[in-house]
Length: 438
Ligand SMILES: Cc1cc2nc3c(=O)[nH]c(=O)nc-3n(C[C@H](O)[C@H](O)[C@H](O)COP(=O)(O)OP(=O)(O)OC[C@H]3O[C@@H](n4cnc5c(N)ncnc54)[C@H](O)[C@@H]3O)c2cc1C
Ligand code: SF4
Image 1 (cartoon, helix red, strand yellow):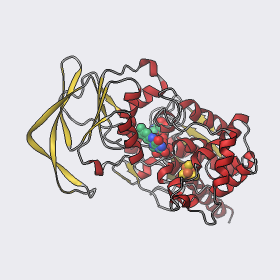
Image 2 (cartoon, helix red, strand yellow):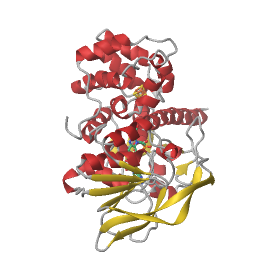
Image 3 (cartoon, protein in one colour):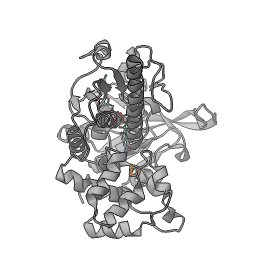
Image 4 (spheres, helix red, strand yellow):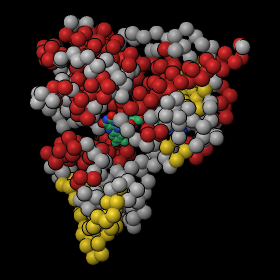
């Protein structure tokens, strides 16, 4: 296996059949409830066991239009597979993600679009952001009969699903192929178009009856450390995007330090070591138990040979013409802060330096630029505030979903939010139509 091969390989037909036949086909299945897009899991698995792969893929994609990506990138251990009743019987849970991949890959290989646009509603909707939330919203709007244009800043669509998710879970070509499949519904994606720079929101408001904001989160803000502008310092999202889209231009040195304790930090250490770095160290300011990264991914990083330094904060980036190390200070964990976790308090005189030629900042994304200029829309920090059921913002023409409302979750949550927002946009525009026509 290559170091960047997908970690969960495709099942062979005999393996898929055997796995499908293990499913107990539970009534009111907990896996279906645990899936944010509520895919009828027993239903699609049953269709695999009766060799109805088209029907199986339809069941999946009807609920979740990015079912192929989710099959690869969902943290199934804490979602559907974590809820499988076989866990209670001390048996291995059904490989739901891999079965989902089996059925959807079958359909994508045919390239056939199995859904149709709904009857024309005579209205156009703008979607800002072609990440999972925007694509899911646009696809649902098309199925409901709206003309839909998606504006995206990126040269390629997909948002973090294309540029962010670790290479060993999914390659960008797959994410792009899946979007090309969705585009067959008649969605117009305007690539390399930054809303607020290349087209104004005022123009979009004039041209479209409603707007969905699926703009995600922004860059990882600087930490304000002395030496932080030295060459060799990198931002996590840039590091991962470069690795995925332009690997040749990414030089990974012998020693790498990653700052952070979430899933993005874990993706960075895992990928740095797979790129050939000899020593990769993760520095986290709280304890191991406080890390927000998934346990199974932390275990994978440890197996790969990553060193974890807990309860330490960076204080200075060392180096002359480029980065040569990171000086940190040990902390004592004090009283709980707003997050409920114990506040790290630096211990004077406890400084130590980790030698490194590259330091990656994975300390959480900040707000996107566009948040600063949204008309009459309430925001809080890096999030847009929405009604929890309708996803409508405080400006009725605007709806929002995905990371920009949650502050950062998973692809499957973004897909669920985008789809539900599209249904709310439909109700909103249908009511407006009723008012006009009496
Ligand atoms: C490093 C990393 C690894 C991850 N790994 C996983 C994983 O393994 N599994 C998983 O389920 N989730 C993972 N996630 C989370 C997942 O990628 C996100 O939850 C998901 O992509 C959010 O979708 P979204 O549509 O809300 O936003 P995004 O995917 O961020 O998409 C937002 C889009 O909006 C566009 N945009 C922003 N501003 C503008 C503007 N002004 N004009 C036009 N376009 C604009 C951007 O170009 C982008 O394409 C990961 C996240 C990161 C950061
Ligand atoms: S979309 Fe994700 S959480 Fe839902 S059933 Fe599929 S793999 Fe599980």
